[in-house]
Amino acid sequence: MANLDSLDKKILSLVANDARIPFLEVARTCKVSGAAIHQRMQKLTQMGIIKGSQYILDPEKVGNGTCAFVGILLRDPKDSDRVMKALMKIPEITECHFTTGNYDMFLKIYAHDNAHLLKIIHEKLQSVGIQRSETMVSLNEPINRQMPIFND
Image 1 (cartoon, rainbow, N blue to C red):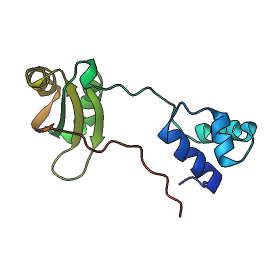
Image 2: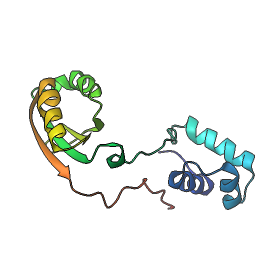
Image 3: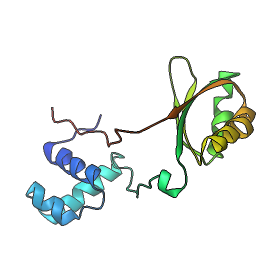
């Protein structure tokens, strides 16, 4: 775990809430110079704590109204690298996690609608070497936030 001081944590809280916040506004809020914020941001990026910034698209507004989570059990867990490479080629998969419990992997998929989701599962997922899958469709997403920065 990185050794973060209170200024680092305050900066991270501000930029995680709004990646477009100007450094000078961060500096004013933190009561330090703009140069200090710039140096801290560079340090946090070099440490790999900040992995970049991005625009967040609304999946439904760009035509992907169905969000689903798919737990998959591999035919052979030794094939995980090969399966991962195949999954990377499926653009509708936005997240993939290796997990404990009932599944080897847990995927997050966006599709246009349920028919498109079914096509992804049958035509793309079934061909990568999975034994079985279980799909759960998200009905609503009432919480979607950045991980909080805890002050010990």
